[in-house]
Length: 255
Image 1 (cartoon, rainbow, N blue to C red):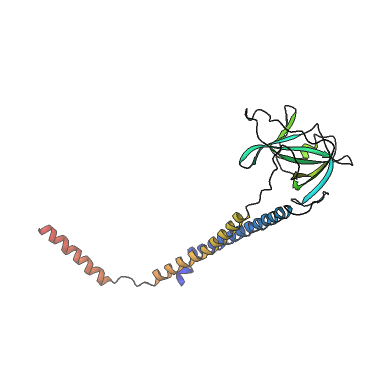
Image 2 (image 1 turned 90 degrees about the vertical axis):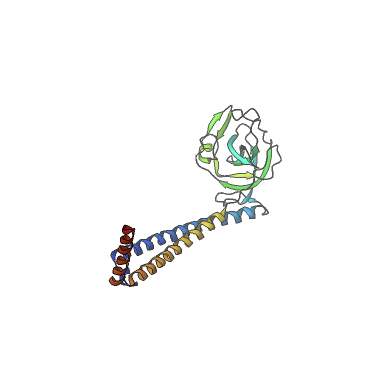
């Protein structure tokens, strides 16, 4: 065992312990992501059948909520590069003005791109006129909206509520509603479940790597101990082998 108390081996043990600790932490982080995504999926599943509740500030994401108001017929936002049923197109957002003068942004649905190409804005069905009640799923703002005006319509890469709020003359809610029952020519946008199993697999993988590091260390240590305990070759055996080699060389010379 003295061979394992050298600075070299102590360094290997310390490096293995640090690497294993880091891998355990990575596994815990992936497990946290798994729990977070599982919680989101549970809320998505519940929203499919839950009765809608009145939309209020602080309503959790994916809660099925209801809101009543009138659509702003003058303002629509197209969010490009959104995929529904395997096709890339636009999601159509329209503010719904409430009785108190504030508004909630409604994601009314998805529309296919214009056949003429991505540079042409597709025809957008107008929102219903008059007072309407919309049921849908609460969603939080996205980042990097890059809002721009194009052919009289606002377009964006993401649904960024703060930037959209700066373009309207009324107070806009900090969450938007993904409509699920509006009867229009738009395609309803489905709720996409999170891939929580991927994070679970990564967590287990990191923990297996952490355990495997110590298994590999034990195997190397055992090999090192066996090598240190092996008896050295005797000088007599070495002399005999050398004599046999010289005899073979002399025989070749004579022949």
